[in-house]
Length: 69
Image 1 (cartoon, helix red, strand yellow):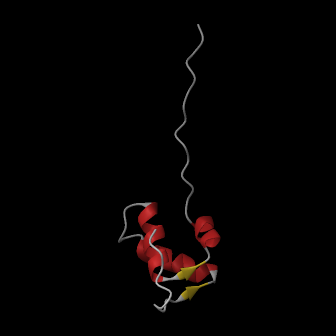
Image 2: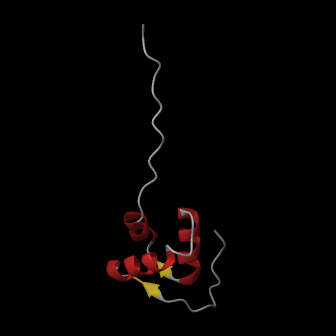
Image 3: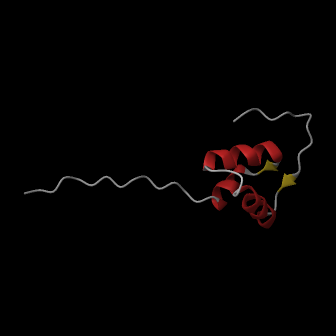
């Protein structure tokens, strides 16, 4: 993630409903969660914990143990 320009004014999203609406607006434009984080933090000042709570968590792939004979 690039460092944000401190001189550039960006809207602040502090309310969960507004943050959710911004996420829904970005979803058609992006293909991965990484891009969602990047676009969101480039365009807005957000609470990263609130964003993480709204985005689905990446579940690790299940690795099965070999069967015993």
